[in-house]
Length: 325
Image: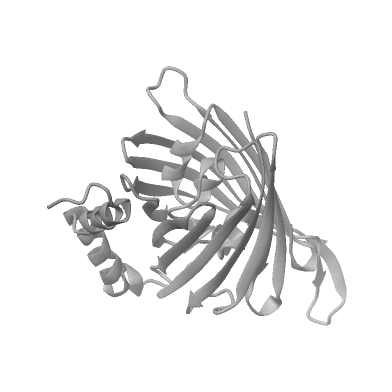
């Protein structure tokens, strides 16, 4: 007999039903087999700046964003999240790095008029280094040089019932001392909500491409496959878990993040949220390290702050400003 008066029982049934679907099982099997695939026999990848968080909200939750990234910020975590945008949204993000370098992100997204629900996003990510002093073999000064890495992205996404799908095409450029390398990449993403339950799941493939070519050398991109689940056990409190496999680098990174809205939940004009997260797995960043942050929402604008671990070099502070139109 069906228990129509027990929403928790119905939600559990919905979760079991989703996990038993053939497409979910297929994705999980592929995710587990990727470490032994032929692709993983390649050299370690370059273009490490593509791994850096571009959003303070996700950064405070240890980069867990495959299922929870929303709006224009989703363009670098799971492009399917672009489908959650309203009429328009813009974002700016900045973090100061080591030796005078800086990491910046600017993005804007909007609903395409007359497109039956399609959303478009544009973004530019740049890691710029300060001026570096050149030296000869005898350690005498020999002028200086600069370096930067950047990626320009164009994304599209659409929602189909409980499903959201999205894709991103990006142009990547890297330069050091005037020598440039260029390349292209594609990201693909899928998200699904569960009817009657505060749960969503997401999968994404990022940095599919032939690599960055420098004169006669080509470096692989950090190809990754990620899967995540977002769950809200009580109103205002979110748990977020991600697993990301870096194919060429042959390691898996895990992220567990939380977000607690002290007041002002989704859809509110104002609010305050606290966030935290922890890393796991053999990642390049500090495994087992904690991240933390907070966010303030006021008049359809969000100001987020994150303190994130960045391996042996310490931690990085990141700030993001988002505005909905």
